[in-house]
Each structure stands twice: as C-alpha cells, then as structure tokens.
Image: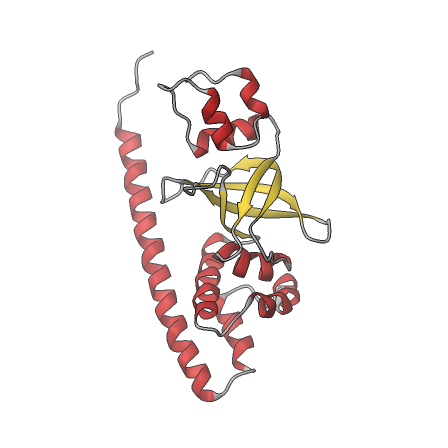
Length: 223
C-alpha cells in the first residue's frame, strides 16, 4: 500500500483515509504504526460515559472528564501482544495528566463509528491480566451503584502506593464501608464478574495460540 508522504502530518484516521485512493485502505493498526514510526503524537478520544473515563482514569491516574475529550499520547510504541478483537490496538505511551505531570500507561484503543480519532477502551499501569480483572470488577460495581468516578479518585492513593492492585484488594477496601448484606451482594457480583473475565481471557488466549500455530506452519511467501 502506498501512502502519500504528507499523510504523516494528519491528525485523525479519517484524514489519512481521505488522502488515499478509493481502492486503497488503511486500518487502525497501520495508522498508529505510521504515527509511531514518525514519532508523532497520537490523539485519542475519551468518551465521558464509558469505562476508560469512569473507571480506569479515576483510579489509576486521578482523572475524570465531565464531557467527551481528547488526550494526546506521546512516544508511542505498539505492543507486541496481539489483540483478541481485530479492531483494537495495544500500545505503550506517555501522556500528561490533569495536573500537567507526564504519566506512562498501557493503552487499548479502538475504532468507533462516528469518531474520526481512535477511542480509548482502557488504560492500566501494571500487569495486564491482574488489571483486566480489576477493570471488569470496577465497571460492574459502578453499574450497580457501588462505585463512582469520585469514589475511585479517592482510592487513587491506595492504587498508587500498591495497596490496591487487584479486585480482591478493592473488595476488601469497600467492605469496610458496607453492611454485611451489602458485602454479601457485592461478593456475589464480583465472583460472577471474575468468572466471566476468566472465561474471556481463556478464550482469547486459546484463539491467539491457534492463530500463532497457523502462522508458524504457513509456508514462506515468494517475493
């Protein structure tokens, strides 16, 4: 695929697509890779009502936006770990938080109809599987009204210090503020969420393993 040289300065995926001939195509991975190769910043949309803004950013970075916004990622490196969903890209990057301090994160971004920029799906700081369980539990408890972005911002110091890294840590902290009946219902909800997350991770790992095996047995292509 031939991409015009001036396309390296575009600010959105839709702008880059408009520079291509109708019979050419570019996906999110190609767009992000080109940005990374040219050491260009990558603008990512943060949707105000979704998980990244309501759970991930409040707990992990003490940030929450009242409306849809855009954050700019710098020094972007695409992750070598493939994604289960083909319309998503994993990457490592730096960005400035609400206080203007530079932060590092592992980002998952995706395409969304109606948006000309990649959309932030989630972001974490540490081990992917541990953080994935934590993300899913946070999202579930927020939807049940147990958590809120403001409550997660209050818990940010515990996350930063390392005393809140897993969903079990979160449950223990929340349990001190609840009645016995509330704790029981919360633990039941968390158990169901963790089971679902484990099943998703197992399915994803199995499919990625099969895809890797297929790639390894394919004969090399001739130039």
